[in-house]
Length: 293
Image 1 (cartoon, one colour):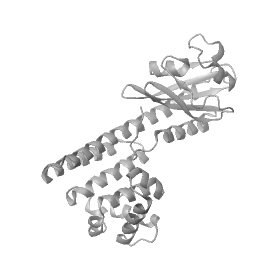
Image 2 (cartoon, one colour; image 1 turned 180 degrees about the horizontal axis):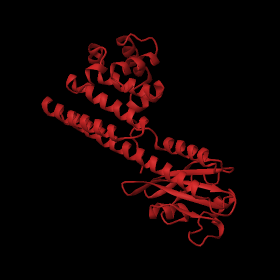
Image 3 (cartoon, helix red, strand yellow; image 1 turned 60 degrees about the vertical axis):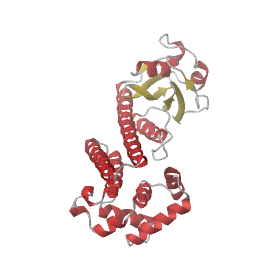
Image 4 (tube, one colour; image 1 turned 90 degrees about the horizontal axis):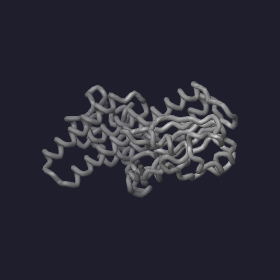
């Protein structure tokens, strides 16, 4: 499934990070994977490969090991790819050209659909072992949870945008925003991953800022309520992206504004928070409760 929302981090980046962690944890020499789009798996992320033969490979359902896993939505492995009778051999040339023999494929399943497939492989025949299987399965589970959270955030942001575009009365809009804020806060509390929880908290803070004091963070987290109220929703959008480590150009792309406009908003945030650098501005906003600490 392809996602074009500029506010959504690249799912491929999350896949790459999990693959690297899996390689380091399991000591397996080759890991790779890709995202599923329009029922086709496209291999895009690699660690430990020696050739470019697998790069960009398009895998249809039921084709090869990856297509089988994508279709069945459960892990599968072959101990000798070239002679295996359990898979089709559409991709023997690139796989064997890379020298891969024993391969494990694990799907990343979200809402009953395979969204990604992760592979671990070695260049010798024989089973990979339970440790590799456990590491890859755990990585796929974490990644599936993160993708599910991202999907839910996208859905709620779209709901918020739709509410804004309809132009309902202020009372109706405030009620809807308050409902979205409460749902985001509940979702953040249910997430075990600290990084994802902090990003959800940041979005909830942006919604709370548009509502005013009624949904603001607790009083003890607002060191200076006047500064909180003075920050506009767009300034909070910008500083939230900066807090994620984005450059001005990346912030502009995500928010559909120019880099110079980003600079202008950032300067305004720095002025209002009495900060001299973007880092100080982020820290100040965290102290104020505008961003999660």
